[in-house]
Image 1 (cartoon, one colour):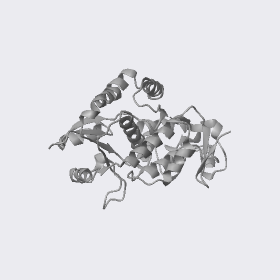
Image 2: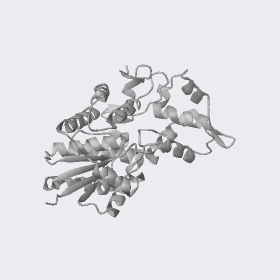
Image 3: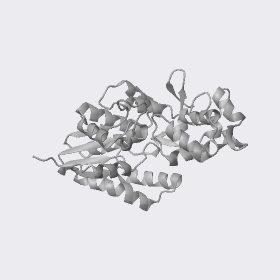
Image 4: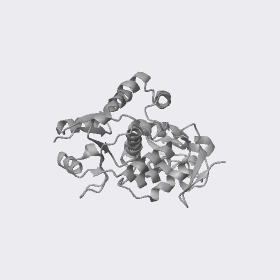
Length: 311
């Protein structure tokens, strides 16, 4: 008997690819960036939608109408979730995708969906030296990933829902403890580590990715912010940020570099960050949040890899 399948995908690019492969089932696109800004545990609630609309409008000038059309409309399609026999989640190895995936799983759990849930996740591909996104795979590789999809066990779903709850609360220290738990989420521990390093370094006030941006400026002959954005997109590891997010980070790092003789160079502050000799917490501090936690309420200790509550 043919199964009634629902695919939840991580974006339009992958959805377009899957449409060309004639996979059986319906498609819902998860168009969000929940790795940034405030989140509410009950995905799709009025409070959740209001918080996300406010953040995206103020931060990225994404209108409320656009959000309704691109995300809320897709979420409404999940109202019929119990009409399906199985759900297949298509998400990638990075933090951006994993936070969205955790929210999607939490949504399914909150709506008491009882059907099997599978995951198709990209990352390391045999014979490749770099992590690959789903849209970067060949058709043959996509089919292979699909054939090897992993059915999530009840314990996997419990872990995902619990991590989403911790992320929506102000509990990054408890969240860090989840790194040690084993599950069918192959890249989850790496994503949690990446998240922990998004908090400011206790010695410099900048986080790991911000510091890496300054390292790229120092190591390469970069002639524009656009070129710098391209470098960061290629060398960001497990973050999975898009160009809008990277461009915003580069803009915030303006106090640490300048244009000199046609290329970007670090100023004294930027060099001090790489040397770890000065702390610029008060210069970079803003109102950024990750889920339920203010970015600058905690500090990351690179020596012990622990988080400290800022006081």
